[in-house]
Length: 428
Length: 84
Image (tube, rainbow over all chains, first blue to last red; front, side):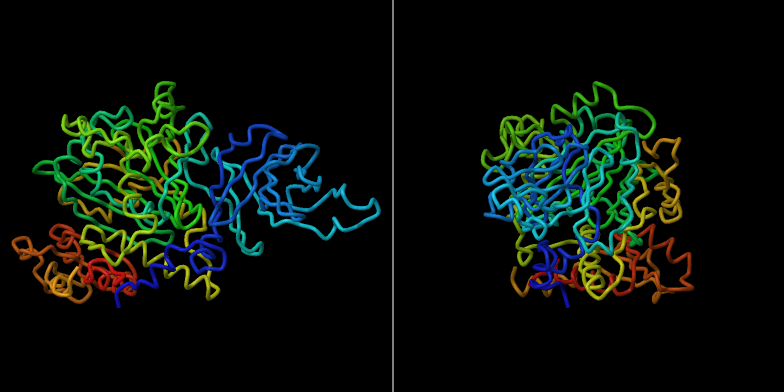
């Protein structure tokens, strides 16, 4: 039987108690940037993950807490609280909570009351790594090892991390991350000029061969996706990307530019965080590169004031510029790479109606990923260990390589994707 | 999408299971009018390496995975994705 409407409902629902929600809660979740909580007792941050409204704060000792957003007393938001002296105090009646969610002070109750001992908000453990605060929202007895993607383990100066709001279900955002064939259309012209993509022979092959052939390999932690394009009479241009369960993708290198990856994390079923990471395994990113990233070039965006929503968003048609489209500066008229993706993926609707889609053979990786997610959710519900929680599954690299037409990509893949700590990724 | 179009989708590509088609001449598909999808189950053993190499040369898509996963994906592909 083909995938049913009911199965799609399972695939896209991330709330607590849903099969996919329970699977996703078995992994460490990228929750917020470390720089969103820059110092002890700094202002708290509201954050929604998989439909749960949470509050992050850094206590006096510098420890990060992630607790239910609302006070257990009258359900007022603790966002308006005071973060001081080892906890966050509700501004309504003064109830105070530590990073474990335990109520540690209840100044509105009689002095001899022990009521506070019975009050504890839901709280999730956090770790800080790779510029991100990660949280684990699953059963404590199943907490996995800390995540260990290559970019997380580099010195801070080798990495640039940003996030943006994407107003679509996380699955359709993820699917864009494993779809090599859209590059020649959605990002045509832009990748030829973008300072974090332009140059190198790869761009030429991406543009000229719009019909890549795919070799997709199911591995323990997700998929390895090879896409080959014509590159002259003797060679193919191969791009090897990864889907690392459940929400990470690694982008193959573009020329000499920093490596890149994403994480697609549900905010709720209609919105997700699109995390975008650039990194250089050998050297710190240059000031010029970081400047481009901060300016919204490459896979990053510029934001509306005081929010994570891109300036180019659905309310302004992503600032589509028909003249630029006509002049051949952009393919769709939307300017930045991430906004090009967002404009198309959000235009599919908050949760794409899959009854109307018509996937072709080049969508095989998307089909495999959907099935793997569904199978993993069912297996975990039956007591299995989630795939891809081991660090080995996460310690892989993307690659871009020119290989002889006679080469076997399957034979080459282990070498192409292997992390060699003192060597750059394989790239052309 | 009409029912007629869905029925036709099965004619849109050719599928070869590499563990069951040892003698197939995949190069013939180079001239065929339909894309060639080659599936290699991880459970398969004794698949002729020459056949796998031929698949990599001639196929539009090569997918390696568990037989169950590949079967499900093939069914989905037959239906243009799914959800119907």
